[in-house]
Length: 203
Length: 159
Image (cartoon, rainbow over all chains, first blue to last red; front, side, top):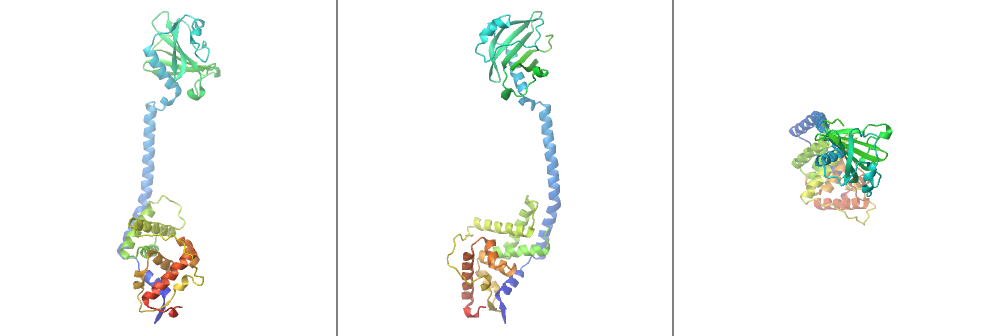
């Protein structure tokens, strides 16, 4: 009796199949993996969401996000300077008197409308820097107490300092409290200003 | 997800590639796990996708064992008068196909499966195996000759 090779080969291959136990194992694997997979995905998504929420909450509550804000970075640097209060390099009671000393600056010192000079006397200044930008540090002293107020002026660099409150746009200075020092930061006529003083202050 | 019939179909493909039943089950089991762990969502043809996984897994196993050698060369001899159906010889039914099966390489077994079970044509085989038609026909020619030699069947008996 003769037979086709192709048919014989097909018959031979198809004679091989999974036994009952093998099929049951695979079937169980397929069934067990379907529902749990969805559950795992949902559970993983929920856990991820909860974790992200917690991390964001912690970062926000600790003010860690705000650390990247230029105004806070400025405030931290200014507060540090305020606590150290390095000696002044030039003395003078009027801005015009000491302006010539700051000839190395790329801008002209100016009087901010925000700073009230009530009971405050300019005593001098020194060079310093704010976030790496060369600046002038002007020191003012109350004539009725020992309170000292320090004014910083630096050319405003939009790329570096980003969006800070601008008095010409009707915005108010942003205020930070760092290590017991109160710091106001604002922009006025293209100049970055920062003012630091002890808290509480009557100034 | 897969019926028993479909799982048997995949099992036969695994058996074809790997050559024995126990390893075929292990191969299929591994590939089902891979399928389930796959991140792909819209699989249009799960059977074809599973076959691809099985084939890749088999090649991976063989590469690790340094037993799988892909034939990269292109053969220049053309067998214009041949196609896959040239393999369909008339055999005495006392000839055991299982004995012939033992003579075949994994690529030859795959050709047998795709031709005899899935009904692939020469062109479809060439495309599926990603080899040129000339290379495929050379393989078929050698395979046919080897089978005939081993069975001591004269060419005149071939249809």
